[in-house]
Image (cartoon, rainbow, N blue to C red):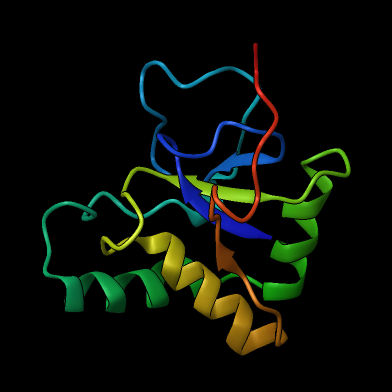
Length: 122
């Protein structure tokens, strides 16, 4: 599993964990609303966001079941969890990656287009 943003990764295995996808996102992505942030997502500090996301979004979920559900959604492709923020910006996908790492002992890295070229869509 990897993480990325909608503007960078356009290949197979895309799963949106955002509240909604950008208007011109190419078809073919899946949606996993259980990992989308709450309505507070753009109105609280980063510290409060961390607290709310962990308590309201992650705490009720079973990490193994969530991991398995995400893998089942991608038809054999590696899941790539997508949201809006560019690499290096604060984003809840990094909280999800850390959660999987802490709870399951797996590494969830950010997609690197230089290390993992994707197939052209056209």
